[in-house]
Image (cartoon, rainbow, N blue to C red; front, side, top):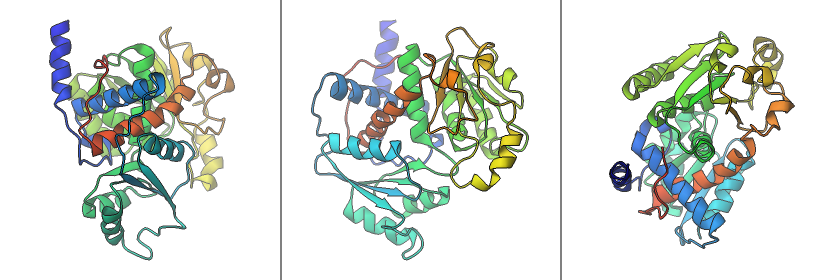
Length: 334
């Protein structure tokens, strides 16, 4: 109803994230996550479709710290910040030695004086926590061993665009209990999304993350299923999701992992037990083993729209953490 819409929009309209950091979506409420998605969709509409120039971050700069290299996150952040009128500054491990030449504490203080916000893609999540503790500016997690929030925001914006709303969807994760899955687990219930997880024995998500996800699904009345059977997880689902079985830094475990993940590849057979409108998500670049070409390049695959949406959600995040911007488009249907 219109009344419902206006009260919903009013409650989201009063959500402010200015000055916050985003290390994990565990720290963000249902309304705050919806607000981020709404701002992202708004910027995409105004800049991409309406061809507006919105210098919302003019005079601001971002330090981008990449201990791990990345195509999409770097391109999204660098082009996105520039599109918004700001200045991006890219730093690799050769340019900045976190905790080596100078402590993370000192780095945080120095960067707080030189720029307005930091996006860091790191090996250890504790690096982000240390940076955030000492920094007086927002820190965004561009990926850590524990969480990958920017990936999940892009996933949910893509699903919102495709299905028209999120509440009541069932997402099935089939694969490794990694940082991407952890972020799904911290977010799905808050958007009314059911989550079914199939991971081989020994590759389950972290216990503390499972406990928090169980608490969230009780609080929001959503379903959370953990199994080691891929077909059980896929059954009756709207969205099949996977990720590489061998992440950066795990190359030496490749043989063992390929053996342990036997039977976990997503194929059209996996799709045969899902809902008729099923779609597929994956965070690229894939290794081939975890999904076959037929699914990856099919019309059901939302992989490439998701890759583009990483840019709009990172922009939405930066604008939300640095300004009091209010979206112009009507609130998204969640």
